[in-house]
Image (cartoon, rainbow, N blue to C red; front, side, top):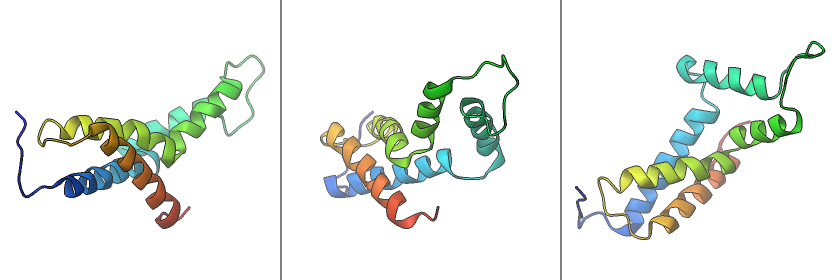
Length: 119
């Protein structure tokens, strides 16, 4: 059931989607809450091991490094998370131009992460 709220104009919908996308992206790639950090760190360490591997141990090499980069880059992850947030928001609110909302959310997340997040 989609609800069209008159008080929620397109700018407010885009702002909410952008802020939710930023927070979820940060939660997924940087937060240290153990139920998220532990599996994320295990996956990232599997993709690019921090220690020398024993000879014959399988790893993903350059492909693993590329995946590692994509999973830790706020600009990259915000594309996927933004798509999920826009899709979820359409269940509750009529999102005007959902593809534009998706791109705006991703760009806003990247800009916020680049300028406000300490590294």
